[in-house]
Image 1 (cartoon, rainbow over the protein chains, first blue to last red):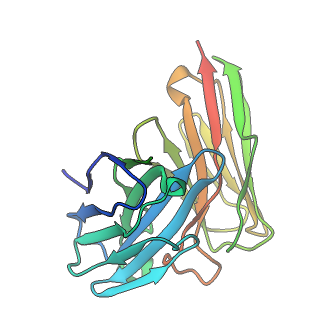
Image 2 (cartoon, rainbow over the protein chains, first blue to last red):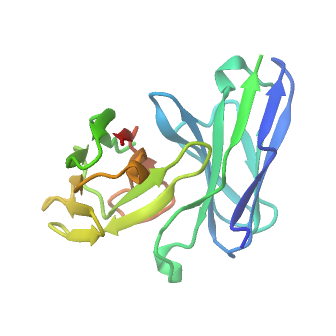
Amino acid sequence: NAGVTQTPKFRVLKTGQSMTLLCAQDMNHEYMYWYRQDPGMGLRLIHYSVGEGTTAKGEVPDGYNVSRLKKQNFLLGLESAAPSQTSVYFCASTKPRLAGGTGELFFGEGSRLTVL
Amino acid sequence: TQLLEQSPQFLSIQEGENLTVYCNSSSVFSSLQWYRQEPGEGPVLLVTVVTGGEVKKLKRLTFQFGDARKDSSLHITAAQPGDTGLYLCAGPPNSGGYQKVTFGIGTKLQVIP
């Protein structure tokens, strides 16, 4: 069972470069999220999506863009990477209670990004 | 943003000891979740508490949701090295929607054999 898959798992970028993180889920979940995890800061929500074609800002959206063109995929883009974006990024998905789900978030294994 | 504060942030104990970690907020949550995260992996759900005053048990782990639904605790009895990990509490806003799920900083637990 694949669940939530993130690619790539590791990446090193130079300041100013761009990149895209891909999240794919095979559970037909409506909601998808991108979090970043930093020491002493916990998991902070970057952007989220409640369905195909819709996205919204979370707590720390600056410097990131997202797209959800297909229900199973949620892309996180960095247009011009900065050292402050060095972090571990986690994608998650859930089936909301209103749709008969439990609200449990299923996470990917994380993508470790270093910006030099 | 509804803040969830966890304490302690770090805990190192000997195998067999008991411990309690706390998750507190000034805001009301419709439910609270507890996750455990191991190094190099994403968090995995342990339990969801929904009703104020609710107590749930998962083997040696006991979870409680405060009566006012502003706080929760996790008690581990006779801790084992396999309990080592980062424990995170999380919750949706009081409106009940899971569009924005907020996480606490976490409690990093180390159980020494």
